[in-house]
Length: 462
Image (tube, rainbow, N blue to C red):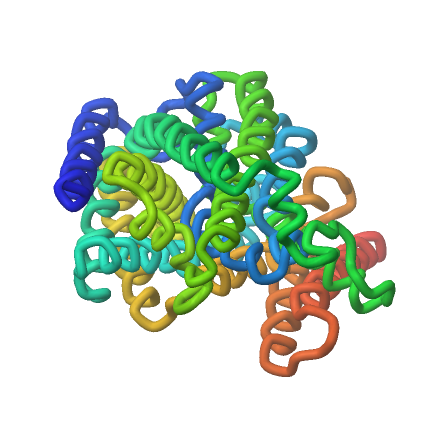
C-alpha cells in the first residue's frame, strides 16, 4: 500500500511538471515564472527553499542528540535569513528587474565580478542537491528496499524531468501543493505524539538538563563565536543564494515579494519545529530509535509504530519537502550557468529561444553533478552546511556592500570573493577553535575594504 502510494506520488509530480511546461514560453517564464506569482505561492516557495532533508532528517537527529544548541543553524538561522531578506534585500533587488544575483554583480560592479560571482554561486548548490538526493534514496531504501544507487538515479530523474520542462512554473506549483501536504502531515503526527507522551510538561521532565538551553553553556569567547557562526551559516550565508532570490523575483510585485518573505519566515520557524518535536517524542516513547542511523529516527518511528494511514501522510509530507527543495536547488545554479556564463559567450546574437534551451540543458548538467556527489557523501547535515558556508564567505559581503555602501567597487568585490573563499578553504584543512567560516567572513570583509580603498586611492591620484 505504502509503496504504491510513493509510486503514485512520484508519477503525479511528473504530471504536474508536464502541466506547468505549457506556461513556459520564454527564458523569463522558465527562470522566474514571468513575475506573476501571488503571496501564498511565493511564501510557499521560500518556505520550501530549505525545508527538506536538512530539517526533517538532519536537524531532527541533531536536536535529539544536542538539544536546542544543536539546531541553531536550522531552523532558527533559516527563519532569520528569510526575515532579513524581507527587511533589507527584497525591495532594492526586485526593482532592478534582473534574473540572477550575478546580474546584480554586473550592474553594480563589473562583468568580471559577474563572472566570478557565478563561479562561486554554482558550486555552492552541488552539496545542497546531493543532500536532498541522499535523503530521497534513503527513504526509498527504507520503504521499498531500493538499492541506494538506484534510489539516487530514480529521484534525480524525477526532479530532473519536471524542473527541465517547467522551470520556475513547475517549482512554484509543486511547492504550493507540497507545502500544504507538509503542514498537514507533520501537524497530524506532532499532535498524535505529544498526546502519547503526555503533554509538553512530560516532554520537559524526560529530557536532560540544559536540553532546551538557547545560549552557549560555557561563557567563553570561543563558545560565543561558535554560537554566532551557527546563526549566520544559513542566517547570512543563504541570503545571497540564487534559489531564494529566484523565488522572491517570481512575485507579481515588490509588495508581494516583501510580504511573502515575512510570511515564509513565520511559516519556517513554526512548521520546522514540528520534526524536532516528533523526533524527541519518538525517542522518549521508543528508546531503540536512537540505534543505527540517527538521520532515520523519524522515518523509522513512522514505519515501526504507525498505521498505514499515518505512513502515507508522513511520507507524502517528507517526499514533498525534499522534492520541493531539490527542484529549486537545481533550477537556481542552472539559471546562473545559462544566464551569466554561457549566454555571454554568444555576445548579442543569442535569441531568447536559444537561452531557454541553454537553461534547460544546464538543468541536466547541474543535476548530473549533484547526483554524482551524492554517491560519495551521505551525511545530510554536513552537505547542507558546506553549501551555505561557501556563499557566506564569497558572496554575502559584496552583496551587502553593494547595496548599502556607495564606495564599494569592482576590485573590492572581486578581492572579497576570492580572499574570503581562499581563507575559508585553508582553515577547512587546518582547523582552529574558531570555525573556518568566521575566518573566511573576516577575510571577505578585509578584501572588500582593501580593494575599495586601493581602487579609490588610484582613481583620486589620476
